[in-house]
Image (cartoon, rainbow, N blue to C red; front, side, top):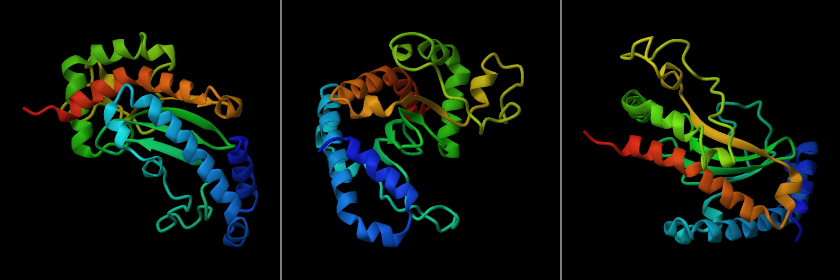
Amino acid sequence: MSKKQIFTFLRDLTANNSKEWMDANRKHYQTAKNTWLAEIELILKRLSVHEPSLEQVKPKETIMRINNNRRFQPDKPLYKDNFGCSIGMDMSKPGFYIHLSPSGSFVGGGIYRPEKEVLQKIREAVDYDGARLRELTSTAPFTDFYAGLDEDDQALKTAPRGFPKDHPEIELLRRKNFTAIKPLSEQEIVSDDFPALIERAYLSLQPLCNYLMQAVEFEE
């Protein structure tokens, strides 16, 4: 089945975001979902060459439910307008994420909205050697694919507690997110070369992920 089916489904869902429509189009949803799972399987096979532990990861373990959690945001649509693939990405360790949506697709990773203790460890690593983080995010292989760390709209306005305002790495210390992403076109995603593109994205991200992993796993 063509990957174009994924975007056809997501566009239809966006235009008809209701339980009644989903119930009537459940087969359409399953076809699109299975197409995406088959693509993830190809991607995991490529990535496991570089990270053998991924051989044990099943495609269905990397995706999330299409239903939005509306417990605290009841105004959200009933269903998401995207398919994703999250590999090891949570609030405590760096990971890798693929996002497919008619409203904007992307690939990338790092650490997003880490817990307080994790963020503190990253800031301590930046305090100790932030120059290395700046260097690895401004040189190859990172820059072979990414333009740099993403803008962080949650960054502090001033220095975090315990760090001087004139610290040489103050811009990094003010951050709450350490991620890098690159937009993807629908043409790139439906191409047969998409798994190879994702492999490149994954390998280019490793310098950032390795730095962050070393920071969060550091023990005095």
